[in-house]
Image 1 (cartoon, rainbow, N blue to C red):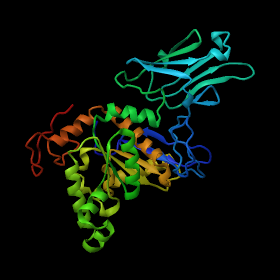
Image 2: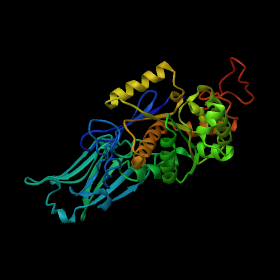
Image 3: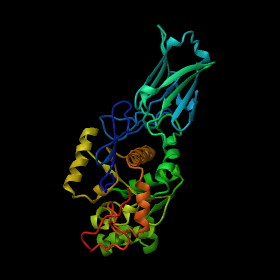
Image 4: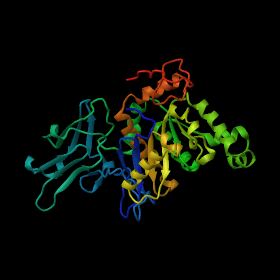
Length: 385
């Protein structure tokens, strides 16, 4: 069911070794929690950060996929294909000296897969991931040996979703988001203008979208910095100007828009969200919450209080700490939460498109019939189901 409240929440937190960005769906917000101080990212995990204390710099969507026990997934020692209703893995086992099929162990769950060769002295893990691209039906998993290959067939929970790869990674998310977003633009909101802009660039690059920044547009138009504008005319003037820019951008498709942060930005004011609803909005929210459960409660409390206009966002990404060098990790968390949101209601992109065609009148998510007057009470809702 569509809602103007966040439907996806991602919490990126930092932990002593290799924390992971956990993306999961909540009744209202789609949430992701990331932690700070990310290390260089290993090729086998979408997010891998160095942390110390459970904060944002590390957000590894618990992907950790390994091939041949020590070789990262990047070596692609498997072949992957998607045949609509199921996906297939072909893993080379020619060098593993498998003498009996009983030595093969295939453990599949709804979102995880582990394939091992059982040996008394040294079991070998061929593939292990806790972050499949989407859910499967574990009871319908079959496998067999074909010459020097182990073939594993996994029945997809959603046959309409095309899997770019077996795991959810930056590469598979950017490739798979095209079919989900259907050209709908993305707006990044939150208190940090710089963070919004840097993450927007990463998202735009990955998706092949146009990167747009309201700060740059406003400064080019006014021939002055935002700070000087605020000093001369006040934050209200800047927010009003940005609202006009957002109105102009609301009809654009395939763009990632970085908005101004704080009260000088239109997104920080509830009465300026009319045109932001035209795209998928992601709230990049820095937090001091020590863990994802606390961050989730914090988000629910924000929504309950209704004091922050950012709670109108479709998705929330909670970060403990921020390092521009690891903006891609935050961008990945954004896409992961957006994927959850859209898979929960596949009509959302079409509904966003309808909202734009009817003039972005501020009636999101309950779109009214054509000709609706916002000042009129009791109009019937347009049936988009």
